[in-house]
Length: 119
Image 1 (spheres, one colour):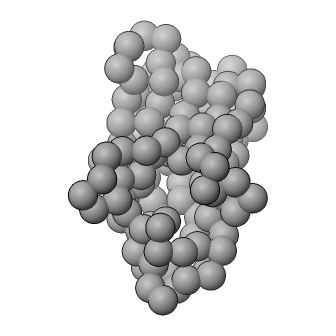
Image 2 (cartoon, rainbow, N blue to C red):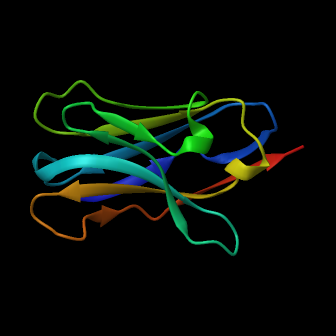
C-alpha cells in the first residue's frame, strides 16, 4: 500500500484546510486510516481516525473543528480527507496519513505534509 498526502500548506489562524490521503496498491487490506501530526520538538499524536465501517474518533483538542471522512468504496479505503476548520497555532506541524492493514502489523505511512498556521 502506498499513501500520498496532499492539501497542506500555510493558513491563517481561524482558516481552513482540507488534507487528502490517496491510497494505492493493495487497498483492500486497509482496515482503518488515521491522520497523525508531529509538532516541532514533540512526538507524533493521532489526530483523527476512520475505520472501514466509518467509525471515527478524534483527538480532544480537534473535536468540533476537524472532520475525517473517506470515499464511498464498500470494502476498501481509497481516499481519506481531513477537513480542518477554525485552525490555530496548535494545529501546525507535519501531518502523516497512516493505514492500518490486515497484511502488515506496522501499517503503512505516507511521507507527510506540512501545515503552518500564521496569526
